Length: 535
Image 1 (cartoon, one colour):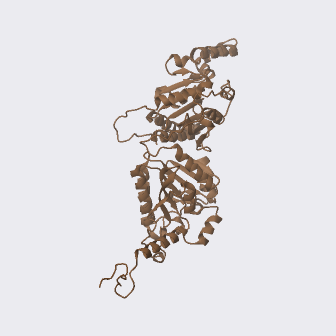
Image 2 (cartoon, one colour):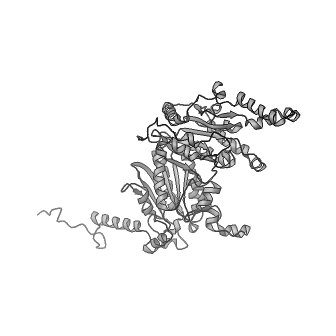
């Protein structure tokens, strides 16, 4: 007599308990994953929401394309003992890692879950982040970190610090290889603050995210200074004073939407170009508004943002560091569907001079664009470097050299447009032909010189003017002579330092054509381990 396989009961293990079936194991797995996805419970979730913050999984739902997230190591647990840790071993260990898509393009992500151990970093937590960072680098895809954690986990001791070391090392190794984006959605203190500082872009949310190396309590103890978390390291502080925050927003939903937008302007890695789009804005559209926007008098200010909006596709300009060093404007826009990095002096702030902050900001932006194959467009209207004892003593030479180094080292297509004045060393630094700009154009009425005519005459003809019977008339005559000889709009063109003088209305068309021609540019660099910029 034979017994069918279907009818045969599963063999009982020693002790008489029925063996688990595959179906029961699947059900057990599903229940464990469901419990992990819900987190520590509704009370912790309500506390998170009461602070105006989403949970880690809610953030991923907002950031990524629907249904695209694939989690890895979701059931990993810590193995720490002592301080009650052996009794609390939640799945995931306070961080969610994996990959998903933004507009169909793959990105890797990790998201701290503040509801679990305050999002603090221990051994298992760090190992998960290391894993996703390695995958992002190896596959050549952007990495996005959603930061909402309390720093190293005190209960686990030094392994948390070692975990941060592993993050720092990987961030540096991936620097300039893949885009790395840090989104600050809660507190970030101590050594943890250096993790976002090493990445390419830092987003912050007002009132909920803070960053500092030493918190208010330590500051009060050491210095006696009483200061709040927001005053010490809030979003607006880092957006306007320290320059740590690249972008600042009022709420998490807007912040995450802007992260999605930024990813759409970036290549997946340094071996690719930013994705082009088909533009409905004609490349040869006349920029008729520019004639009215920019005054003839070089002493009169205007808003450079409006100039940029006239030039880029549909007036859409994504500005970096809007609140920091506002005398220079940096950001991304499209010209005929191609992404371009735009650097421009801002006459509305400090007359557009270059100072320490502006040089730092622009140098960082130029390096970022060069790393990710984004061509550079430089709009010049600069009266020089900011004079003064403070600037000199705080290192304007060293900091200005950073911008000079960044431009000289950049191998991406580089196009310069001189709108009005370009004086002294600031003219050279703002991507002149002499430091490697591929093409240079100027508007009629441009003034390119060592200094303004008034200053030059005061130096060259000081004695003659003093000895004259009519000093003011002599001074005015010499100013006119200097302008006619060395500052007329075609002087630089005649010397081959500017390629052409163009009509302002044709600026967009000229730039679109130039970027199209330079798209296939190739540049060879000397063999070296790495450059040694003036950090």
